[in-house]
Amino acid sequence: MNAQAVLAAMMPEHLLLLGIVGLLGLEIIGRWQRYALALALVAVGAAAVAAATLSYAGYAAAPFAGHFSVDPATLLAKAVVLALTLPVLMMSRGEFKGGEFPALLLSSLYGACLMQSADSFLTLFLGMEIMSMPVYVLVLLAYRRPQSAEAALKYLVLGGVSTAMFLMGVSLLYGGSASMDITVLAQALGTGDAMARAAVVLVLLAFFLKGAIVPFHTWAPDAYEASSVPVTAYMAVIVKAAVLLAAVRLIGPAELATPVLELVVVLPLVSIVWGNLAAMRQPSLRRMIAYSSIAHAGYLFYALLGAPEGRLQAVVFYLLAYGLLNLLAFAALPPAADDGERDLLANLKGLFHRAPFAALMIGIAMLSLAGIPPFPGFVAKFLIFKNVVAAGYTTYAVLGLVGSYLGIYFYLRVIQFMFMSPDAPVADAGKVRNWAWTATVACLAATLFVAVFPGWVLAQF
Image (cartoon, rainbow, N blue to C red; front, side):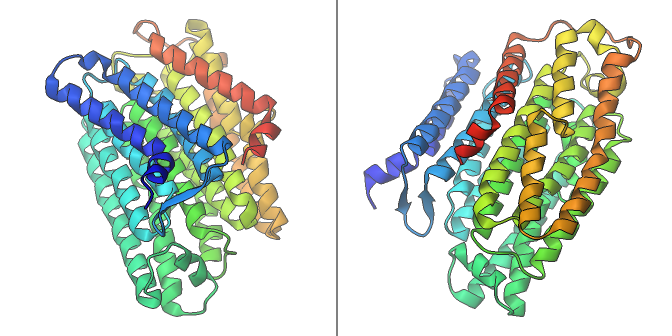
C-alpha cells in the first residue's frame, strides 16, 4: 500500500475528515463556533475541487486493492455530489446554532463519498452506515414539529430493515462465492442459482428502501415534512445521489436478468405513478417534494435498464439536474416564523406579488422537475428513456413516460398558486437571508449553464 496513492486517491475524503476534526475542535474549545459553517464550506468546497482536479487529470488508483478505488468518472461523480452539498450548507445559515449540523452533515457526506469508491461489500456497507446514521440525528436536530420524533424513529427503523436486507443478501452472496468483491453481484445476475438470485433481490430491495421506492417509501414523506429545510434538501438530493451512484457501481457492466429485471421494471414504474398521483393532494411543499422524489427515484432506477456503458452518464446528469432544481426551490422558499406555515402550499398563493424573485426561482424549479423543455429536467428524462428504448425495452419506456405526465399537474399547481392566485394573508417574516440568496443565485447559475450546454456536461462523463 503506497502512502502517496492513499493520500491522493482519498483526497476528497481526507479533506472532509479534516473539516470534521476542525468542527469537533471548535465544539470542544467552545469558542469561534460562529466560524463552523465557514469551515464546513471550505472543507466541502476543497473536497469538490480536489475530486474535479483529479478527475480532469485522468487519475486512477486502487490504494486498498479489492476494497477502494477511484477513476476519473468516479471522481467526477464525487465532485458533483460534493458541489451539490454547498447550497445545503448555505441554506442552513440561521437555521442551526453551533457546529452540530455541519459536523453531522460532513460525517454523512464522508460515507456518501466512500460508497462511490467501494469495491467490496465491506466498504459499501461501511459507507452506507456512515452516511445514514448522522441523517437520523439531523431529522431531529431542529425539533420544530411534534411529529419530528416519530418521523426520525420511522426513518431509523426502516433504515435498520434496509441494513438487515443488505447484510442478508451479502451473506448469501459470500456463501456462494467466498468473495466480498462487489463484482460477485454482477456475476450472480447471470446465473440460474436460486440462492444467488435471492441474494441479488435482497441487496436490490435494500437500495430501493434507501432510495424510497414503492412500497418501501413510507419513511420519506414523514421524514421530509418533519425535517428543517436544509435537512430535507440533503435527504432529497445528496442521500438519493449516493444511493443511485452506488447502485450503478454495484450492477457494473452486467445486463439485468430475471427476477431483477422485473423488479427494476415494476417497482420503479409503480413509484413513478404513485409518487406523482400522491403528490397531487399534498398540502405541504416538503411532503409534495417527498412524493415527487419517490417518482424521480423511479426514473433513476429505470436507468439500470439501459445499456451498461450509458448508465453512469444518464444517472449523474439526472442527479445533477434534479439536485440543482430541488435546491433552487428550497433555497428560494421565503422564510417564516413558523416552520409549518412556511411549508403550506396555500401560503404560496400570490407569492409573485410579495416576492417576485422567489416566485420566479421556484417556478423555474417546478417547470424543470416536470420535464418541460428547454429546462435541464427535460434533457435528463429524455436521456433516461432514450437509453431504455435503445436497450430494447420500448414498452417499459412508454409506460414510464405516461406515468411521468401525471407529475405535470402538481408542479403547475404550485405555479398557479404563485402567479395566478390572490395574495395569501401571510405574516411578514423578514427578507430572505443573504446566505440563502447566495445559494439561490448559485443554483440558478448552474441550472442555466446545464440548460445551455447539456452536451458539454454529458461529454464529461
